[in-house]
Image (cartoon, rainbow, N blue to C red; front, side):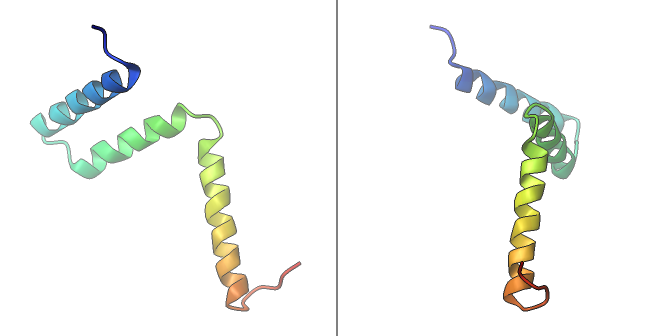
Length: 70
């Protein structure tokens, strides 16, 4: 029986995590690298996340009365 794509991803992520731990790569470095690769493989995701964060921050500022609404 062959692996499903999710099983393959889980296996590869597990292998990468074991390799990183074996070579004492800091967890933060491993996670940052994994996240960077995730963003790089999904065009537009970084901009979408940035837009959502900006929108959320603007809503908070408007709620506090620090910027005007249009």
